[in-house]
Image (cartoon, helix red, strand yellow):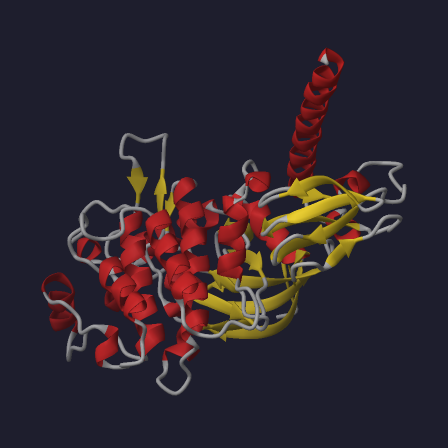
Length: 429
């Protein structure tokens, strides 16, 4: 097979009972894609055809709808008689299954960061009316640079405003070992079922074991519904108490005791990072994202664009007394102060002080602004800076650039307002 539709087949990536996945080339857009071709024999299996068709239609319906940096993007879907395939973003990497083996476990901080990113992505999906229902290591891809992507939304529960039944679903889908008690019992589901499954995923990534061990599926399902699993520390004593507590709460059978929102879950992971005794050689993505979300500069910038900002920014630690920008500099970057305090001076005289969330250098963003700096900026205390190169920002998405410009205009108007008050005060004297 050399071509399917407009896609040129490069090589086979893998296959299963119902589909084969190929690496393909979209020559029109000059990009590599993953082509998931569904098995025509499976489509005609009388026993499963209706359920299978619904799963296929569910995933196809999400084409172009879930756009998040930590979700595999579904680009297109073709469902046409014998030819049924899905076109997806190609992600070079491996699933997290590799890291559920006792001899391949990831560092605690890496595991927490992976789960944090999954939580953010699933919170985004929830806002779009989508519950995944099959969260497990095999459906989470890790790229070579360490980032993650959630895949396989074929089992998803999707809000449907056009029918009286608020959700569309196929019963009995998902992976039993990762299912929540309410999912096993076919009860109405919410995002908390994904929280449970992500809690089980966290458990396996920390310990290299499943929380429940059984000789048959009936025993396994009974334990999930009625038994408490051993704490992760029982298998790995060096697991921090805080991660143990996060797993325990995420896997609570009682919904009122489980994390109520994704925000609660991800904040617990951020708290773990903040209190983690491990020596960090660099600022983690978890800490960066949480810090940016707390700064007033990014108040109106959406989560998707915020992840994009995280990718294009450089984070710098500066010491008290360090000079950041000098008068007459022609720097092609602007800065947001993530923490600490800075001093703005001209000819040695202090003009202003900058605090957490303030920005400087943003005037370079506007046309015909190649003027030299007339002020210097230095660190009054130890500080953390978010530096964004303007040439890199120019290549960011339209929505990201638009939201930045909106933030810049707000700052300029605020500064003009302050200047007017000062002028009025001086004239009043």
